[in-house]
Image 1: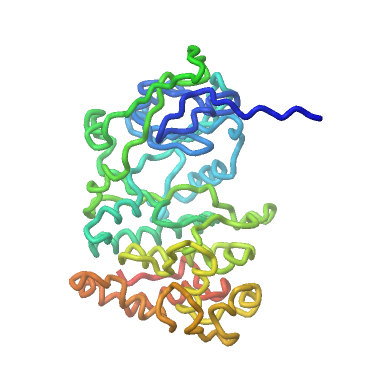
Image 2 (image 1 turned 90 degrees about the horizontal axis):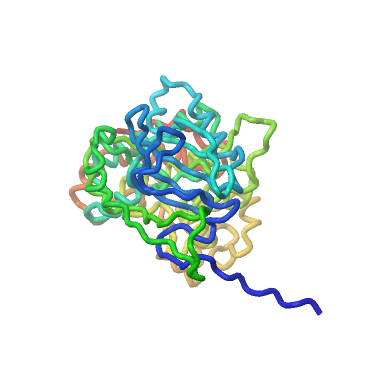
Length: 410
């Protein structure tokens, strides 16, 4: 009889709100300290964030005298990733395109050697809080109408640049759109710490009490609370930066098929994504329409409390009518909520609201339902918005307008 394997024994004492310290091992993270100099020019100032495959640092480019975001990828994943390829591709796009300024651009890429292996490093422009975070902090969970209009227009221009480069974003939502910090490159480090907070360092210790090796940093750094920066952005003096290209792909590259599926948040996912059809640029158009609605108001177009597939499909049918037959037949639970002709069943037990349709016009009428002044200010746009969003939210991708043909009324 084979021996029972021993459970994994942790090496490091667990620390809250930092990356998995156990990944400071061969193939894992590169150890970084505040004030380290990377690649002979990037001085580490603060921690911006972390994920399963990287840590992201605020650094000062001492050659160009500007702040940058420095992503250091774990050694085991430091090959030429699809995200790296997309960033390179976008950086080589038309510099005169008006939407380029609203897209995160790769500034530098290189490899460094460390105790845990060779690490790919990506240097991009630095930005602050996401639009979603700022909206959450705004009064009434909604942005002032002039700010919302400006952001929606920049959404469109940035996505037009992506598509002009042959890139589908694939994960477009408020959390993946960041806000640039006005005049940030002129800030002294003391001002950075005033707004970001000083780096919160937590000692790294081994469970067995042994000294640390070179594989791990002497301390871990918690990222700043994103809400600290939110109040900086409640004016009109900034631009967005579309970020996070982990789900992106080139739709013009016929030699490489698109991904079999995308991890777009389901409330913003086009029906072809939900039903695992091959995605294309029109999936971004659907997500853009949902995101424009959300940034102009205080709630989602397709509201989903539990983010479940059935819940989203019910709301979709209530808003836009019965799905095309091929998708309708694939939806196994449709009879729980609807008759075969698409009529809503009042006794279905559905949790989404009243048993009737709530079409796009009615949803737009409720876009600022708790804000009479904002509703008045926005009301002049609603008729035109109904037309353009309706063209962006057609079920069949081939019937949706392209992002180049989208014209917003502001």
